Length: 102
Image (cartoon, rainbow, N blue to C red; front, side):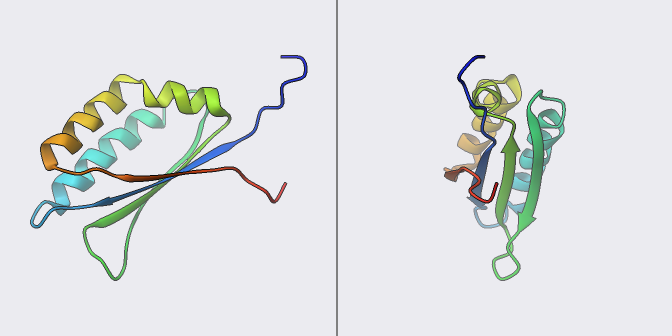
């Protein structure tokens, strides 16, 4: 890959559970986490619940490069996750991040 600089990429996803569906949302995120842990180029997948907003989750994902993000986006696990979110009526907010400290 001459002349190409591979840059780590972060993704911050926020999901708000519908009333009474917190456990279903968390289970869907955890299923995606389990699959993501085995994906090449995935270096971190952390699930956080907002302290002041139970049922609101932020997921911090870090990938080795944009190629790993693309592979994740089109994985069977991600397709199943999107279907689960559709069934739950959730549209996550996504923010794509590039590290600037190194």
